[in-house]
Image 1: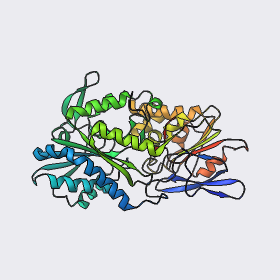
Image 2: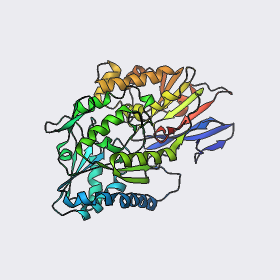
Image 3: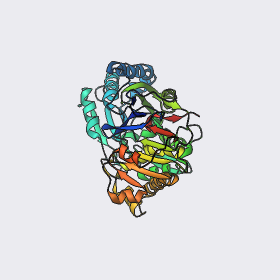
Length: 426
């Protein structure tokens, strides 16, 4: 579907005003009337849909009511429970999901059962631990729940078996030794895993660096993997690896673009994930348009545009599906945290980053290279990085970047404010 965006206002002079998420705020941009806007323009904390906090709360409890009976027998004998929760680079509303989940879990088990809440960082720096601690405090469970951040390079990781072509799977010991493992995350379209969520909180979330590297080897052609679950080697590997822990469960949420829960599903990792992915596609599926003359693609605001590293993979890569040889492109991302790590910067500047960062750098250059011209609206990158990316020019505002595109009266313009809430259905 092509969304009618609340706040899309036609003004004098044959122009239309579109709101684009930008960091924790937004930017307004004037585009020609008739511009096609794909997907919602809301972003975390900014809502025009009119739903209430009570509706989000009801959605979470509905998911728990459906899924917890299936865990009752295992909870009765469990001595250790591990919750694997996404880190601060993901939009998981932990304050909406964790307190009710912990309230129900602590009521189901004895007081001496250990509950660990492990932030699933993968290879990321530990960002967002305080949010998990605050969510545990909201549940009144500070004295019963231990909150830690995973370290993919720790020396006490546990081998749990092999997946794929004999790849050794190393897992955080708090998770590997738990009787019950529940992943807590969100489902959005993902360039490699098809959709985020599911067992992805185990692998790569709480896996060892060598295991994560092996997983990334399955991400060679991300254009064919985004939104694809049936023939996806990346998804297949991570689910096979996570299954070595036994019957992993997930609490996955489909969000409104503002970050509130629209649907929550609790159940076995694969089945619950597929149900949530179907819910996401139902809400946000749309037909892919033909390549436009001008494409404006934002990254959905923070945290997805907080760095170049996140914007490239979480949002902008959708542009690879839309850019033709004559397309002029405006990439939009605040990038308040800059590049997003020394490794990715090295891959961009000198070509000597890790294999994963080098692959991301290649995709970014491919994105820029496909277009006739590419302009970048940002407020956090150095001029050296902008040149290294290969864009024609950088600007602090979207309107200034769009002015470089020299839009003609017959040009077809497409704007994608929040690609994280867009998946192609045809």
